[in-house]
Image (tube, rainbow, N blue to C red):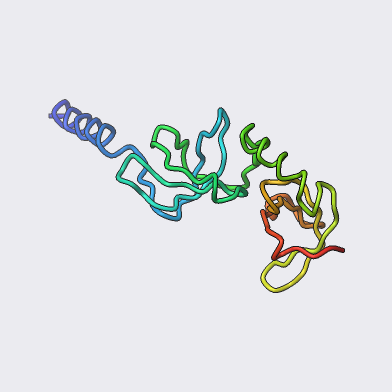
Amino acid sequence: MAFVRSSVLSLALLAALSSGCKTRYAVGDKILVEWEQNVYPAVILETQGPTKFKVHYEGYDAIWDEVVPRERVRGLAEGTIVHPEPPQKVRAKALAAAQTNIYKIGDRVRVEWHGTMYPAVIVGIVGQERYRIHFEGYGDEWDDTVGLARIQPR
């Protein structure tokens, strides 16, 4: 009788592992996505069936949003995520934008966040008048991507 019970348990375990082991992702989930040979934090904007998701890469312009297959999703993003360097194609576009943008890397500015202005420094250029900023006195997890509407010179 003990053999029958363990066999039933083993079959149930195998069935559970083979059918429902994959994580289900939904709109709004923060995930890690393989992009240009690295892993980046992203948020799911929409699902296109169980195997495709439209994602927005955190800290990047919406022009980089894309539909990715499930195979590129590396799991849920949990805890503090260190952003890797931007992919080469993003750096190339940012370099072109840097030629005409108002602010340059290292410029000290004030940035609006929820109605209050905070001192910040430009740490990256991500597109035409789009900047990656670091709020002075705060951890890297508070870094943000902003446009001119939220920036003032200091």
